[in-house]
Image 1 (cartoon, rainbow, N blue to C red):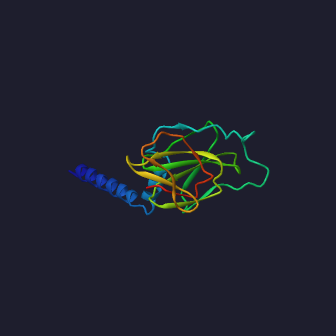
Image 2: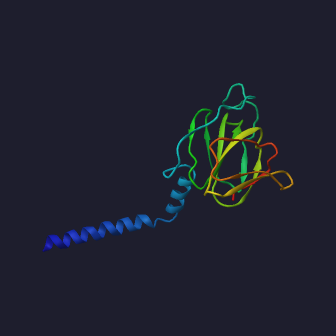
Length: 170
């Protein structure tokens, strides 16, 4: 009889401990962000394209170079030419060459917003891996639609970033 109460008590303690782990403040957001950026619930690994043809020796530059940015900020990662990356379902993943690091900078656009681009130059790529039918719009300087992509697209779709000033991913 005493053994039965101990077993029930241990089960209750384990359940309580697990319950506390499930309600750690910020843990669910951190896990969600990791999934959005290609973590646990990621899609297949994709091979990043070669460096742009104008780049002779990929790698960090010794000259002053500005890394591409986006506003509002999103999760980003760098991948070397020929390296692999993931783009979880629900994301519009964009690749732009980062001359400061000599690698592709990947931006994971998950939340439905208008994103302003800075220092996105030359040719790059994207993968619209959002919910089927979601349309991402690539906007020019005056806010008119330059081009668009309906999800799902293929990985590594080519895009000239020079005329693109902002993206609305949904």
